[in-house]
Length: 158
Image 1 (tube, rainbow, N blue to C red):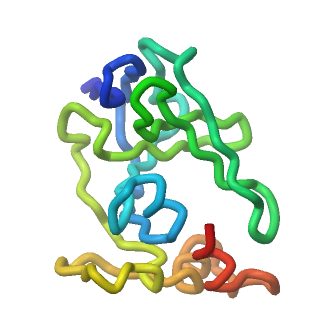
Image 2: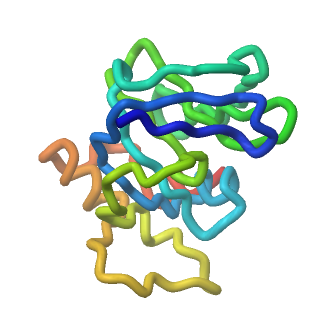
């Protein structure tokens, strides 16, 4: 089943064949600032299941400063309406799609909140999804403790 998605103005559109996940809601300061909300829901998709159908020439990127080591935090967005967008990267087999861009049900639901220590004071998590701090999500993904130089304060600054 093909799922379509697009930016707010419709200038950039894409299709995905399958949403493999994870489907995370990220609460780090950078994702909050990009989304304008208390968290940014993003869905993992394998690169081979994703394709742009229009508007690639409208995509611009902002590269935030590297906090501790590459890769940098890169924000792709529509140059017309400013919507955050997915952007395939040759260095990775998967990409993250802001869930609000999808036009239909991706067939998966959010499975966790991440970087919850950065949740703003005015918000709370009111669902039963698992929650992960920076340290916990790093260990969950890699099986290792955080290396020296990774700190909560650094990750949360913009």
